[in-house]
Amino acid sequence: MRSVTHASFTITRRWKASPARVFAAFADQKQKDKWFAGPGSWTEVERSFDFREGGFETLTGKWNTGMVTRFDCVYRDIVAPAKGEPGRIIYSYNMFVDEKKISVSQAAIEIMADGDGAKFVLTEYGDYLDGYEDNGSREHGTNALMDALEKSLSS
Image: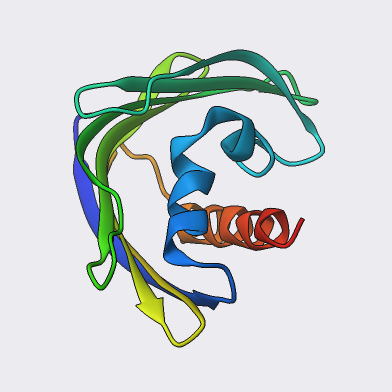
């Protein structure tokens, strides 16, 4: 049975890293590879990265249970932070579990100066498809990624 459930969440963080450093953690593949991955019970299967407006990013991984998840992203708007001006990254993405599309989402990231560091705000709007029950797992997973990003900023 076809259905759509709508949800959204916002995550706000403050880091000691500069806005340019936070932006680079998304814009540079080597830096992003340090934090953007599945958890320990997950193995990367496929990865592509094209960080530009209209560019695509994919990440596919296999869990120790045998389940395969895939993130397919297209970047819609990218503005690097500049002196006194915030940066932003807006992207749309589909999530798949074992080749079944479970969601279509859009996320907006804002990165702005905050004292001697950066304020980071991520707002995501998700449409969960055909009975997929998210139950907060997307927000939980995104928070875990932000924890990993924070660790990468200090290394």
